[in-house]
Length: 333
Image 1: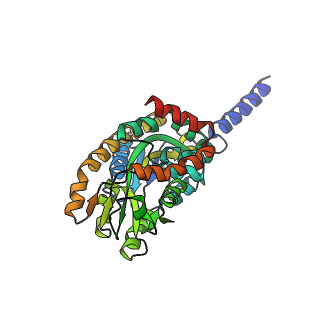
Image 2: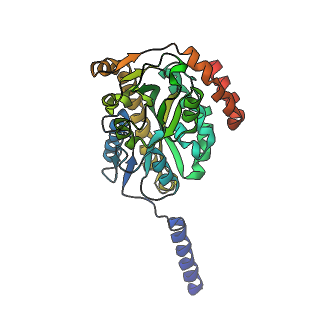
Image 3: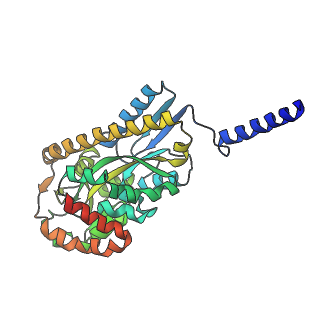
């Protein structure tokens, strides 16, 4: 009998050991997370990401830390997302525009449809809504878990040729865009020639005259010194870029529940900080850009919205019933 009991105990311990390792995936006790960001160190998302890193280190007694890699050190947005999805180990957390994830889940482009939102508060409310959450859910199967929503801001056109007063002024401009189908379609609808390029390569490309124009939110334009290589800024606000703070699902599942809660709260707290910083910079940096030599104009946006309405209708079928949920959400807000 003793031998039989002993055999059962050995068998039980073996099963427990296998279960505990979760298919050779040991629970994480200590780790330095790598955070990949495409923009420069002064950008609000980098500053907020460092706040996130400080908080998780403090709350885990230094067992869980994070290092921010700005300026595309680990790759541009598309490369970072690809690396995360591939479980490459190159990056653990990525902060990037929500619509940049559309290559893995087409419905992720829904928040970036042109002229959806009039102000930050409405845009932020949508990013935190059940509609956006439904778009994000399939990303879990691609090793991408969304923890919070940062703010990139309302995108504006800059160029080296002329002020953009009407959609006609966009015609023929060679404009850099991210590798983002909705943004590219919006620029095409306006008559420009969109050419995708990694953000880390943007400054020298503009400096060399390879591109006439680019489009980004005001804080990005200022914090990355794009005013040095572009003469005109037109406040087109054509697309709101909400950002997703995402972590590798593989890493997440190996974290104890206590760490998961700490990460979740730190991500949300840093997102609030990022949002308010972005709002402040958007409201205050136009004067600084003007002082730096940029010629700034604020065109009537109605004609731009009319011309780009086709982007919405052309993509409605991609989103299925989620598109109607978006329309219902907008009507209620």
